[in-house]
Image (cartoon, rainbow, N blue to C red; front, side, top):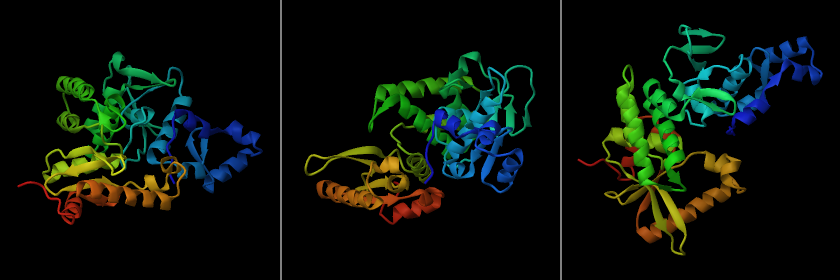
Length: 327
């Protein structure tokens, strides 16, 4: 199952030619292993085991590319931009697998692509350059704005939700004042910005909500907006029959139905299962759903990643549960 990694883990996965030689491989062996797909050449002189790479989500693979690019650069290194800055900040990239590393031009260079790195002539103020574990990139706010301008609404909203969550959400509850301050600050930035994609970025900021705990929840909310739903109830708190605290992703009052995005991670990701088997997670979900229905009288609709790929398909999925937009 793909796993999440941070910058330190990405560094640890990277192997140099010296590392491989110390393991007993000759130069000829290294080239053969690359040809046979046993190891993957990330950047000149930097490699990763093909098995390790296959076990990463897209964000992890791209983070490895970014870290390798940084390690191969002269100090202080490039300023990573857009999707490449996003993975440094730990933001999700919903169904996006960047083919190049993205950097912002600082100085007199012209936009170009070279050795898998795209240099963007975007202009970044010094105040918007930060350093994360020794790697320079655009600030979190600037990165969210750039993603809003340059990527799909699905990618941009998932990242914006995650950024807002890091600032305004504790557990399942969002601090309304902190969220309002974030939206105000980001809206001010967007209003001062001009050019391609800025209107789309402004819409993303308006729609952002930190209570989305997974990109699939963010995209579900985006599709709900496209279907004509007003903002649904989010992270609805239900107290179970024995005082248990349950939180439901969505609430639809008119249909008297809760909505739950079921990502596969909760069943197959060991970190999310918290030591339980997939079967135990399924049974716990069933007991939870029975308890919620018993207390509230509301049904629970469940959907997964395949249902939110298309607005029309998601609409049909919801309609099967009696959940329809007003009007």
